[in-house]
Image (cartoon, rainbow, N blue to C red; front, side, top):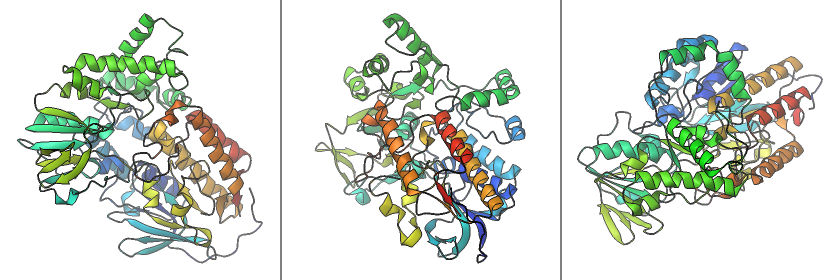
Length: 539
């Protein structure tokens, strides 16, 4: 770290910091910086707080992390007072929680809604950012924090003729606030990722007929969602400090019961009994059955085949069952958690179309032409996911030192230091950006760790009289190399997934999150701070 002896007098700015996004990252960032006496403005494209849980209103939307731990831990009072109702609460409950946080900490006055950021430009002379909104407003600040979310830029594939469709078109990430009634209607859903897995069973219960268009089948573990028992809640509340500390030491920031070191070190009977137990328990803890799923293809195949066996057992039609059986490695794509997903394909009003055998050729006024056949529908649901990790940032025209463009810099894949900052973009921070554990972890603890790091960094700069910070290019290069090296050690980077951007046409394939685990990442961040912000140019 380089620190100048004195800080020159600088022109006044509208704010000390502008935070883009009012999801869980943006709200906590506002709280921390305001506690430090900074003038902060949060700019949010939506009309309320919640981020992911404001926008994702599709049928069946709910979190796939145990909810007592998918929550803030910075305030024990908040932990103790909020009552979660389910193991995996719905989107509505999560949005209510976000609004409660904004109420409790009086965040509303410093947040500006229905405001989409169009551009952010660095001025080297004033050492400040100018942020421009789509409505033409221009605001200046010393710092900009991009809390734009990893999964917030939704993806609409370029289907020929989409604009000609005579019926209604919905995207799971932009669902109407008043909901949609599909009763008596013929509906098609394109996409069987996490959003599709949650949407399809609910739509099937309403629609006269549902046709699902699937490109890649996914592994879906049953949620076995249930109301939370009051005694269970009381026990967790009484032990929150110890449980949170335990979670911080786990690979993903979740408390999963760990299984054995290798799926190959036990008998087939013992292994299948363990898989059966975890299947009946439900949820993402299935991933922790054995430690070598991502390092041994033979071990991975045992879990893969177990789930395929469950699909064949649940789905009555053998041809449909085989279409639903994934062929990629278990956990290579995001593992899905669903409710009655496979059972839905036993309904008489549900059909499954494999777009590999019958490609979608075009959207026509009456429906979808695939494999030479027209499927007539009244409504189309696009469960086509997101331009993950970089999409929201690349939608903003971000220009750093000398007019350098972040879009251009990231054209061949994102480059960042710790997923927190980017060289040539001083005083610009990213919450859970590419190169951090982010989407491979429990998101809220990862968000809190990033926000705390940024807030502490700004407090340190203030104490040092520093006005400018950015990563050194060599440190950034070293971190990017490390992220790639660790990714190459895992089979998770070997298949096509949104972790690599392979769901977006023309996007460079780079494994974007840091796969080394939450504890290792936190230690690295702490070591860098202890070494005087090693790898950062601070002046």
